[in-house]
Every structure is written in C-alpha cells, then in structure tokens.
Image 1 (spheres, rainbow, N blue to C red):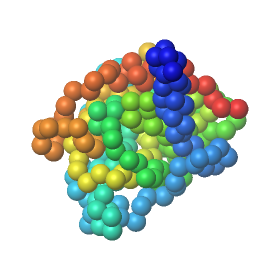
Image 2: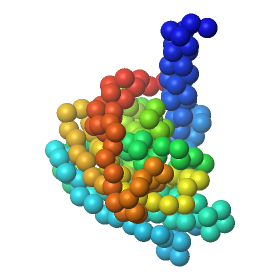
Image 3: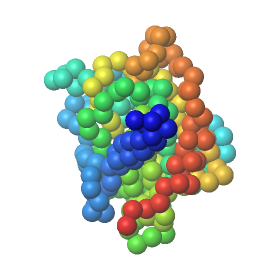
Image 4: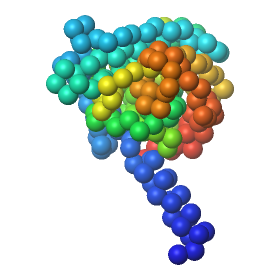
Length: 228
C-alpha cells in the first residue's frame, strides 16, 4: 500500500475514534448516555486528596476537584465542579491529554442533582441543574465537558455552578493538570487534580501541556455541531 494512502487511512481512523466518545445527558434521549448519580465509594472515607483553585482570566471563579479511591478495584475516580464568579457565561471546560494519555475511563457521569444551579440555554431541550450536554474524550486523550451546544443545554453564568462531574479510571495515582473554561471570546484557566501516567515529578507537581488548552477547546467549540 502506498505511504500516502496509509497516512490518509490513519487520519480517518484517528478522527473516527476521537469523535466516537460522546456521552450525552440521559434525559435528551441520545446514546450513549453518561451515568446519573455518584459512585458509592465517593465519600470522605475514600477521599485521597482535593483542590480548590481560582480561575484566572476574563472568566473568574473556582475549580473544585477531588480524588476518590474505589476500595474494590483500587482505582481512582476524579470529580470536578466549576463555580463561576465573573465573566462568561461558560459553555465548555477542557483538560488536556498530557494528564489523561493512556488512562482508561470505565465510567463517567454527574451527581444527578436537580437543584437550580445554572441558566437554561435558548433551545427547547434545556435544563438548569448544571449538567453538561455531553462529556467527550478528545482526540489527544483529554476530556471536555460541554454545557451548551447550538442552544441546547445550560450555561454557567456568574454565581452559577456545574454539577459534580466524575470520571472513574483504571489508574491509581494522581497529579495536577490545567483546566480551560471557554465561551467564544471569554476564557479562564485553573489547575485541578487529574491522572498523570506520563509524569516524572511526584504527585501534585504539574507538567506542561504539549498543546494549548484554550486553542484546542475553541477549535472543538467552533467545529462541533449538534447531532440531528
């Protein structure tokens, strides 16, 4: 097979696999669906560490994050919540692939809280509980939490917050990664706990991301269209 053909096929494969990992909010009827409700082991007894870090940029607020260890399988669950203080509204939060590369995610979801936390988007299928429209595995193995897309979902305005969003992994260590929050021209960055399978520093020491989180998030925000 010619080299050019092999490269083209490889690109098609990467693109197909990268965009086959959307997990949609269960109530809107899309499949596959992410889980509603926290895992049973997410409690103080199994908490490994936590962080609350400020969001810096035209979007301000706090990113809260936690690590919980499942005593049955020995692997970690990573939990995130985004509290918005100013700027925004926030439509998307991303974490780059340096933290998640090679990490298997076996389940993901939210705490399933129905309390009012956010502002419904302009479409007919909207909610105000702070749930994302979908959770996505990015091409570089990072993760994205899309709150609003094409007027469907919810928006995190100042004084609003997300639900608790969690990822259970097949990974038993943790580190610190960068988080980007975006919506059009507004953006902010923070740090949060995350897996670190490629890190050489000890736990809690961040390493640089190989690609710009904001650029990656903006490209996905612009290029993503709602499935019909």
